Image 1 (cartoon, rainbow, N blue to C red):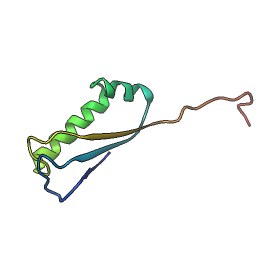
Image 2: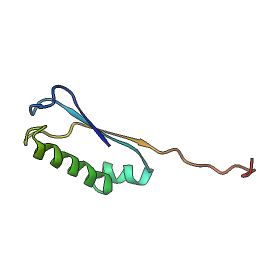
Image 3: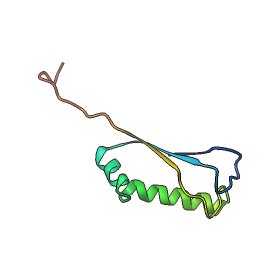
Length: 81
């Protein structure tokens, strides 16, 4: 997971920041869209950590969350080839 702020290290409430969670399974992404699951817990923890360190203000809200879906593995007609 990586967090990127849009401006200087200390941002104000209006400056957006991006949380990149990397690749995850389809089920985890669906749960995140509903606002639940382990990815949502990870985002909450990240935001709490940024607020505690003073990187973002207490009134800042997350703007963009980037998650890429893992590719599905398909078995072909000839699994050994």
